[in-house]
Length: 196
Image (cartoon, rainbow, N blue to C red):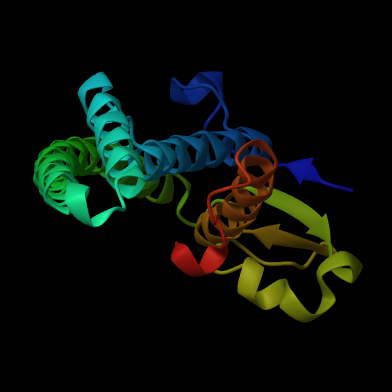
């Protein structure tokens, strides 16, 4: 059904052949790294100090709500003001942590993109005009010409799939697979393809 092609890439050319499956796995690895970075950004980490502040705020508000008589109104107001001050401090700490996380995330994302783009460009340059795979025409009937873009002639009854359509197809498929897999692992985060 699927026959791997890549003439000129074998031992005579000085490199190991890349099959369509190995390209798919490479793209899948990049998608998982990208989704993992996104997960780390969305999930975040709460510091012990923030947790302690949240607990103090909760206790102050609980104590203030227990003081509901007119004679303890001033003490309740004082506790609420203290809780408000602690909330402002918590917000400030969260903003600082958020800035640090965004900087870190953007740095890692830029590094990942800096590796991904040259790798994809190198794959396109290496396999330009070379068919990645040959698939029988009847399996890809309406899409044969699109998938064989710059990859040869389908005179043998097989559609020769080119590198660019293969990279596009594997990117979309791996995004979908990562979305489904990570939804099972972390259901509280929206991994829909609309956010990509």
